[in-house]
Length: 172
Image (cartoon, rainbow, N blue to C red):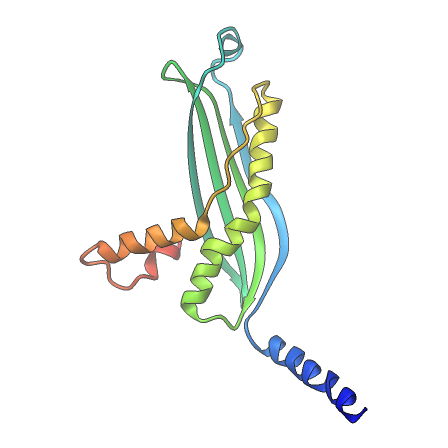
């Protein structure tokens, strides 16, 4: 029986140790900005729908206060028909994240990968909703591997001869 009484104590100690280490929490997700343009309406609806879709994705982060960061994921999609825009939609999906006791490189990676991964489904839904409201077929964007994008960015920065320190690119 004495052994059973000792089992919860290490667990309690382990839980208190977890709160002393790095902490990450989502505080809020919100739509910061959105726009939709259909410059060729209504004539764009008269032809057969076979667009070329261009997609762009960016993210940025900003420190709001101690250990609190705003991350903004910017998705832009443009459908072109015959080299002219059928529609252009842009969404700025944002979130407030608390991140405490992370090393600088860990924090940079967290803000560039984990946070955009959390925001992406909301941004994708907002893009799709705006496109459908514009009377176009649904636009279901494929998932994005933010870890791979981050690695590509870091690799590209490392290949630049006079890149200096690697932290300047994410401090916008």
